[in-house]
Picture 1 (spheres, protein in one colour):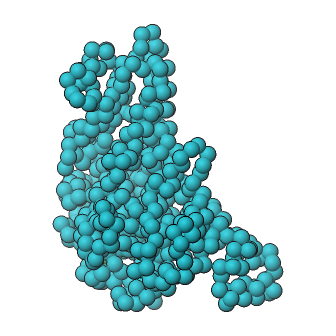
Picture 2 (picture 1 turned 30 degrees about the horizontal axis):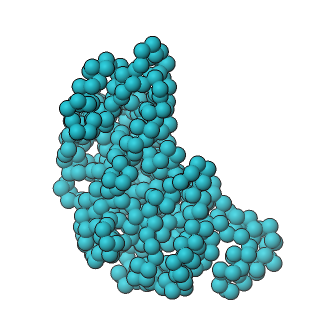
Picture 3 (picture 1 turned 60 degrees about the vertical axis):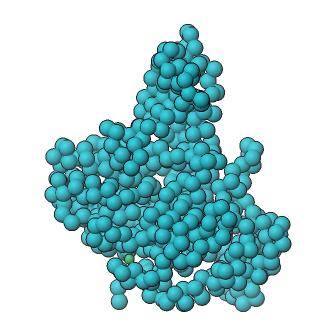
Amino acid sequence: MSFNPWEKIAQLSRKEIRALQNQKLRQFINEQLYPFSPHYKKLFDQNRIDPRQIRTIEDLKHIPFSSKLDLLDNKPGENRFREFVLQPDPEKIKKAWPPAKLLSLAGEKIVKGADYVQEKISREYRPNFMTFTTGTTNRPTPFLYSRYDVDNLYLYGERMISAMSIGSQDKLVNMFPYAPHLAFWQVAFGGVAGCVLIMSTGGGKVMGTDGNIKVLSMMQPAVIIGVPSYVYHVLRTANEQGVKLPSVKKVVLGAGRVDESLKARLRYELEGMGAQGVSVFGTYGFTEARCAWVECPTVPGITSGYHLYPDKEIFEIIDPQTGEVKGEGGDGEIVYTTIDSRGSAVLRYRTGDFVKGGITWEPCPHCQKTVPRLSSDITRISDTKDLNLSKVKGQLVNFDNFAAALNEFNEIREWQIEIKKRNNDPHDLDEMFIYLCPNKGVDTAKLEREIKSKIMLATEVSPNAIMFVSFEEMVNRLQLETANKEKRILDNRPKN
Ligand SMILES: [Zn+2]
C-alpha cells in the first residue's frame, strides 16, 4: 500500500470522527492545556471551570472565547504570548498525567535512564521554531513550535500536497515572501516533508520580479505557490515578456482572498504561456493555528472548500454578536481550538474571519474524503472597527500604527498615506504612497530614509515612494478645509 498522510482520518464516519475529537479534546485539556498553560489555567480557575467537566465538543460553550486582544501587551515587556506556551515541569506532570502514562514513563526511566526520559519530554515541549502574526501591534506576536509541532507542520504539508494531487515528479516554485510567517514555512517544510522538489524564491523582495521569472523559466515547474496579487503580477509580467511555461498544472494561492475572477485571470495568463487546464487552489491558514488547509482539484467555477484536520483541531462557527454556536452550514465567525499541540496553544480562538456557508460534513464529492470542509467564502479582518485593520501588500496592517510611527517625527508638518492598486486593476499589486509636508529647513533625504525604516518596523510594509508636497497641496489632499474628518489614510483600491 502506498503512503497516505490522510490515512485513518479521511475515511471515518462522522460519528467516528466526533468520538475521536471528543476523546482528544478531553485528553488535551486535562493532560496538556489546563496543567501546563498559564493563560488557560488562570482562565479556567477564574471562571470556576473544572477541566474534567469538558467532555465533548458541546461542552466547549462553557469556556470563554480567546482572541487577538488576549495576546496584546498592555505595557512593554509584558510578553503575554508566553502565557499561551505549554510549560510542564515534573511536579505538574505528576499531578496531571494518568497513572498508566506515568507508569510507562517510569518503566522507560528504568530501562533507558533518567536522562533519556528527561530529554524525551524536553524535546516534546522545548520551542525550536517560531512564526509571527503581522501588523496588529508594533511588536508582532510570536507563536512557538516544539519538535512535536514541527512534525505536525510536516504532516499538514504532506496532507496538502496529497489533497491537491501533486505528484512526486512535480516540481514546485514557492514565491511566498521569505519571512518568519506561516505561509512561507508551511510550504517550504511541506515540500521537504512531501519529498517533492521545491524551490523557494523568497518572493519579490528577495529575488525581484525578474529573478522570480528566471526561476520559473529555468525550473519549468508544475506548481506555482504564493500570494495572489504577487503571483498574478509575476505571471502577467512573464506573459508580457513572452516567457513560456507549458509545464504549469497548478497554482496554489494563500494569504489573501481568492475569488473566481482571479482564478480565471491566472488561467488566462498561463494559457498565454502554453499551459493548458491549470487548476487554481486557495489555501486558508493563520499563525495561531500554525497550520494551513487546502482545497482539492475541481472543475473551474466550483470549489471544494478547505479540507480540515479533525484529528488536530475543532472548528466552531459562531454568531459574532451573541457568541452562539451555529449549526452545520451556518454563516458566522470562525473559532479555532487545537486538540493536538505543544508550544503555543489556543482554545476557542476567535479568528475575526467570517465564513459564508460554514462547515459541511458531507463527504467531498470531488475527492471522497470524509473530513469536514470549511467553505472557501471567507472574508478576513472583521475587527476593522476596533483595531482599524486592513491588508496592505499581503500584510495585515493596523492603520493606527502608521499614525503612531509618522507622528513621532517632529520634522513632519502634515502627512497622508494613499493605498492604490497598480494600474487600478483589482487583481494587481497594492501600492502605498506617503505624502509629506516637512517643516522648513528639514533634510528631506535623511527624513525619507528614517521614515522608510520606521514604517517598515511598525507595519512590515514598505512604501513604494515618499513624495514631498507643499503645505497648500497637502491641505487640499487631506481635505482639511472641506471634509468633516481629514483624509489621513486613503484606501483607493477598487472594490472587487
Ligand atoms: Zn475534496
